[in-house]
Length: 252
Image 1 (cartoon, rainbow, N blue to C red):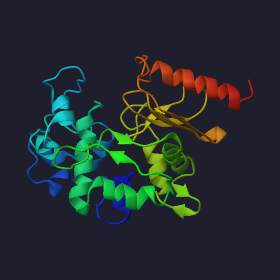
Image 2: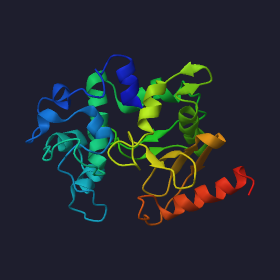
Image 3: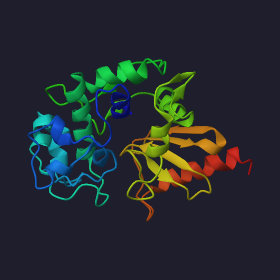
């Protein structure tokens, strides 16, 4: 969302802007081909192993290291971007770094100015950072259910918040349409297995902001544990939550 607003404001050139133009020090055989949209659609080709259990993995270094920016700029682009989907927290981190580099502000400052205040959030939120104060862009945005629901409402109303157009409607449509795979768009998870279009944001510990446009519904679940993934790349608890809510809104 913040990347899109930066594009709308002319700070970033567009989703096809080359990351090399923002970070010339980016390395790898395919570094010159990497564009912003590759980062949002999880098709960056970044050398990154999404491992949550290996204490020596790059994921662990990002979570617990001292300088996430230095870490990200040391990782090469080894595969051709836009070729295949590969979920990587590092892609989101690099996208966030691009936004910060282009604006000269932290993501917390931008989120406050461009989203939190315009959406009239009731409480302050907190964002985890490394020891240098750089946000872990892919995780650890902490708030409450009612304020999280504002993200869902914003998307439900095509980027409009009570008469103010925060996100371009074309972006909302693009973000909630499958890019390289049918279950993932521009940083949003997508599902139509329940007989209606659903898009949502999810956290690794079972946190969800689920939007069901047909029924004018936003679901928020705060969690500390997520059940395993089904074959469709959606978790078991997600399907249970959506199934029970749809029974209510459908009157069945």
